[in-house]
Image 1 (tube, rainbow, N blue to C red):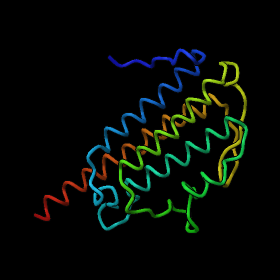
Image 2: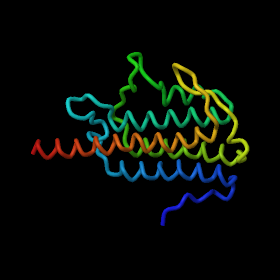
Image 3: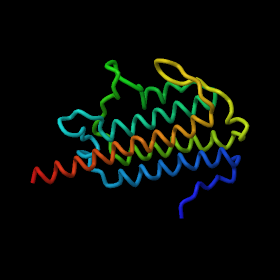
Image 4: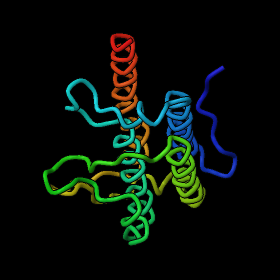
Length: 176
């Protein structure tokens, strides 16, 4: 049975929002399970799309930024160096290849743990705090929206990863 079960150490609404993020991260883990390195680095027909590797790294970096935004702290340079930048000099997701799906999922588990620890310190009233986000045109959002956005953004890119996997399988079938 599916449910948005709240972590007992979190306020009810915070826990429900965190649960949505956690479930989507678990779904991402299932979607990417068994991906070969070639499939993870595959950029679609004619190499015109972001690879699953690029998308996963992007999701981690966006989520890390949100965790630190929620904490009211700047993103530490160690994370910025390891997971960034958000976009390259051409305004695209940075290229990445050769990192295993297991490494990505292990790193994402660490990001999720940071979010969990941060959410355990929030009250439901804290969700109404406004934070700034965006790399070009700064916007404002509540922490509540930010946590929801993390779950929604993850599902959005899961659709892209599913499409890449379909293209990859079709391409492999035609190649044989």
